[in-house]
Amino acid sequence: MPLDPQARALLDQLAVDASPPPPKPLPASVPEPQIAKVEDISIPGPGLDLPARVYTPKDKGSLPVTVFLHGGGWVGGSIDSVDATCRMLSDRSGSVVVSVGYRLAPLTKFPGPVDDCYAATLWAEQNSVALGGDGSRLAIQGSSAGGNLAAAVTLLARERGGPRLVCQVLVYPVTDQAMGTPTYVEFAEGYRLTAAAMRDNRQNYLRDEKDRMDPLAAPVQAPDLSGLPPALVITSEFDILRHEGEAYAQRLMDAGVPTTLTRYEGMIHTFFNPQVGFDKSFEAIDQAGAALRAAFGS
Image (cartoon, rainbow, N blue to C red; front, side, top):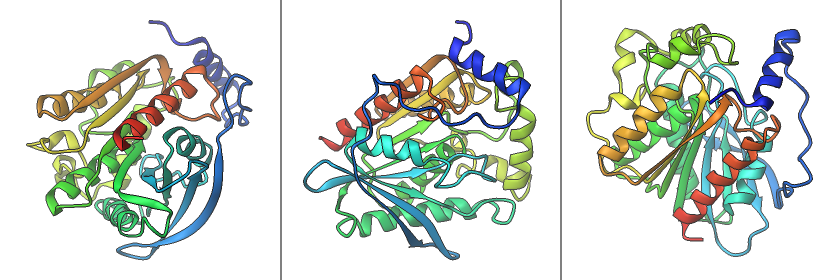
């Protein structure tokens, strides 16, 4: 289908002015996130303490916990860059969201960020009571490079016998390092995330060519995906990462993992953000929140 008019308007604006557009207020039709508390903390990581931000919704009782991993091509992004997304996700999912500031490349190359995210996920399980949460209902979510890291954490958790994850939500995830899929060619330029930028990011993130085939860097290369947590995979139509995200979802299905794949037609990379303000931004966040609630049994 054609590019969504809201996405087209943003791309036209960026073609004139490359600076990020100002955040958009929530439409009157979108409920404000009901957040009881937001707290900045530090999580002990394998190399140093990691910054994190904890979002507690106004839901009552012992709450499930969602670990959230931001995007940014392993070289950028922060807990600040996904603040609005995590506020809304915490409300929609009814879970304590722990947003993790893992170390970035090129100062910390693969597998350092994977190790950080696994350590943070294990910490969230072990410290769930102090967070006001229930560690037996633990999920993980990530977008773009964060989706790549989230998928890697599920592989490590299976290999190491924990933590037990009840759901994984992967939003336009990087799942391969070959970067030669049809969508890499079709949408190489002009749709916000470019193929050239991703190749630069890969060069900064990976140590050498051998890392390109490591399942913790390219989860679609894992020989066996059975036994992983149920998944929601969200892709956007006009996105270089669409093909590999959908290929990973199919691999999960083939391995017997309960998986929902949703392609948001007409959308571009980075639409999963309330500050972008597309109608489908809120639709996708609501879908993620509902999937998490269902997985948590709440």
